Image 1 (tube, rainbow, N blue to C red):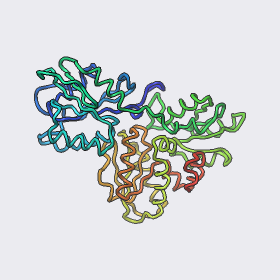
Image 2: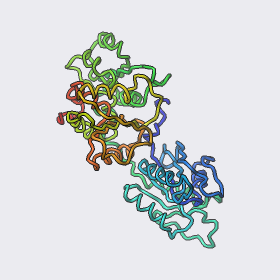
Image 3: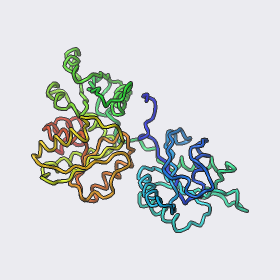
Image 4: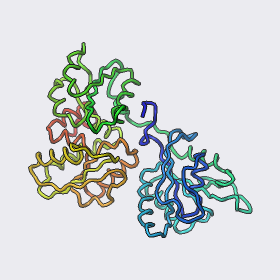
Length: 398
């Protein structure tokens, strides 16, 4: 992925929901201009959510999601309905696809779910070509025909009005630095690193630094001392991968601000304050305490994987306790979090803002402490005050 490509997690997510054979897949294909979803007269053709990233005017970069029929009565229907509800947590906009403006009980239930999740929504009355008379579209009710390609542009324009294009309160790092500043990025390249590219938080940092007129210096952890020595002036900020916190903390002089990609990502996603407060729960963990370690993406596990190996080992060493760990990845985030004493989430770079806030709020509502990899690692190594000091809104929390 190049630096100009909008990551999926940064795109507006639009989910299409409805009963089987309402024409969801046909409408998705008409909007995208592609045969994204399989279309058939057989009920339940769409069995899993289908996603497509694309540019959709007037919205810009989006993720289009076609979901299974909400009234699926097949053997796997219950699981597919549950999966569709999980997809809703990601959606900035939901489109209810129906064949009649008078909604049935199942469609009304979907509208209630949209409202409960505070998700902007439209109602697309599809197959309008079969109607003897076509009423005018009003408010969030749009008449469409995927077959005749009518109402498609009207639906696109309505989608564009659903999302308020509000600028984030913070950038990834640009609002913490000034033009001309030197920022050193410590980026370990291990066996788990994707070949030929930087991981997303590193890309966001580089782009942000360039955009604000500062200077990005990228180095590996084993070259950090040489890098600092080669600079005419000390850097204004060092950002490191959390996995090498201990080494970098020992190398970087105390008068040089230090933080991590994971901490900045938590701030960017809007849950850093919760993550910092959540670290306090670590001190009360004891034998048998349950900890959920969750990642927003799925990847091949390495022998020294941070989530399954490094983090559990460091937590048990710090607490001197036999902790009980469970793991989740991708869309497999549990609904019931009440059985856990602590949830430690990754930075969430591959999860959009709505999904991350849903996960954080779910934990808080169920009385479970919530933090992330970077803050937890910094806490158990005794350097959390130092690495959150560059972030004004949280430095007073420890």
